[in-house]
Length: 555
RNA sequence: AGUUCGAUUGUGUAACGGUAGCACAACAGACUCUGACUCUGUUUGUCUAGGUUCGAAUCCUAGUCGAACUACCA
Image 1 (cartoon, protein in one colour):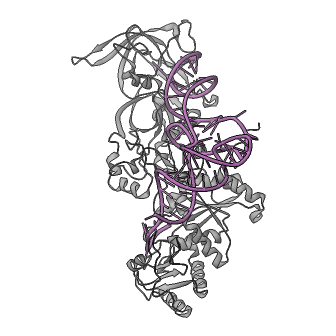
Image 2 (tube, rainbow, N blue to C red):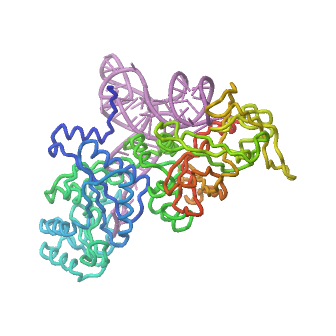
Image 3 (cartoon, rainbow, N blue to C red):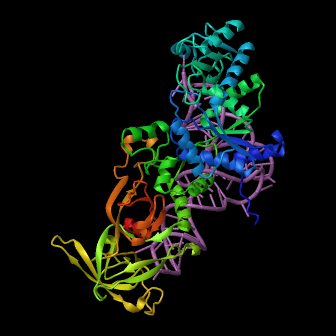
């Protein structure tokens, strides 16, 4: 009843603000991606945070594209970002673009010039860098710092009107070239870029810097709690300076530590390299930590939300075990995925005392965790495909599967007793022979026997075939970005394994793209979008926990 | 070196001067027509040194370690 969930530091701040009646107790957040790439798992947790906070406090959350750099941004990304957010289960209250505010931002700049707080600088990029100083040494004033307000106004207008070439002039804030925070040493507000913008076209040839756009965009939208990652903590005083000098709505920024994941890289630059250099097959390769990749892999949206919730939020550096994400995926899929049987590495099992040419239909429960999931019919016959690893001629003590003399349950069918196997000249097992116990029929078992093992199977006569793609971690080391050498040195060469001939139960052949199911004892799978009418392809989303594999590792 | 932020079991996160808890992982067991799920139990932690206090993870001081910042990127 009184299960009190503790608050994270952002929730604490918000609840204090609400209690104090700040902004009338209103909560308004935003998710501000730059449309220059695909969303990854880091964005996904940020989305869950921002939209989740708004949801929890009956507030609003905007989607705002920070599109202040026309050279890197494209509409294609806008579309994919919108898709991903919706898929994650969130809806934005408003969709805005920083470019919506270009006019307003221009006016802000003029206002600051008129107040003597901004100036046009003719220095080159190199000169500006040289005058910047360093962490230990103060910077020096630009020779153009003291131009008159009238001259600055004229020059800035001429910049806007296209009288100058790229890089010839910039507009800078006049703050303090000796400030210990480098970002307050007369930061650039506007630069000249004669570039086509994905939304404003050729209307502008000057574009605001992110730092002159982000804080004011929050302010224009009257965002009450502007949440971002730790690296923007140094920018906060600058945003506050602009807000204060402009006298506009006081949005407040709060920073949290971005959440890293073991065995993955998260930076856009690195992900781009993986795609461009062909280490993966595109942005939505199921091995990619992108939202589109993980979606294709079969990770349910609910698992992302649960994961984001579970890992919490704080300000310290962290690297979250990807096993926790996988746990969330399994937890959700266990409750929702129907069970089916598929044999990935087949060997033939012959039931020597079963009448030839006979088929029986068994009924199997679709999901023991969900009584509304119904059941299906599975055909059974004298010859079955079973998993090669489920038979051992000479087995260790705790092997509960097929080994001569041992009995197992064929899931949803009969108990069989292993009698031996047939081998080819090279000594490979090509058939396993068993006898069945007719009175052990599933659902009507009068044998009185209990067996330790149950294995899955597919009837040879009725089996359909499929391609299965098994995925493993993309990297061999926990923290590839910080490991020795280049991060690509640590790519796992076995991150994808393709099984071209897997036997599946006939019902399964009807599954459609995106359908998710559990292959009993093998893991969760989903139908890949590469599937065609002739060939169905399954991705392995995640394995089941495997206590037997762990047991074996010990020896 | 400067500024800013941070430090709680293997990982992540709580405890807001009063029993260091939760989840994952690990380990042991129960259950099982999935060696899954579920259930039970166990191990492991307050960066260091001082101080304040009846009492400190929490407050103070000093140190140590880590991260971010010095793009006409966001």
